[in-house]
Image (cartoon, rainbow, N blue to C red; front, side, top):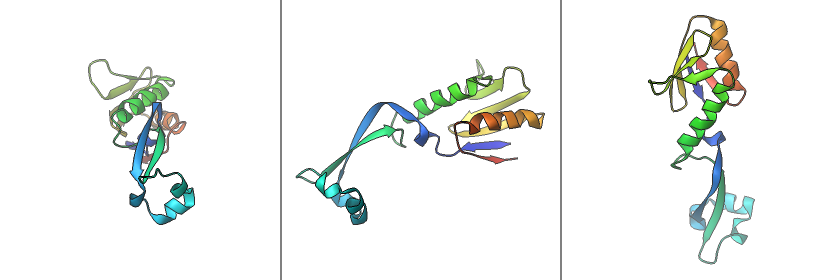
Length: 131
């Protein structure tokens, strides 16, 4: 089975907020009007924003998302293998999976074990599965 976590990075809170700026000329007029950005832009045309959750391109996004995922998995007995990076096993169930970014390749014997992994992930993340 394969599992994909949708928007895993984008659901991860940052430890420290980040900041970006955009030139208002780069922003569509309807967005400027909707958010009242004309009043928030600096005199030289910059709009600043605070980033509270991980986004693609931030160097810490992957690490923070992985730490959070490992914590979710650990609550239900899933642990990374000691010597094989990216391979996880359950403490008592006969299931293992390889994790690459937000994609899982899952090997299981009993469907109940696969359902357990699915339920564990769905507590925190929207997922897609292929059996």
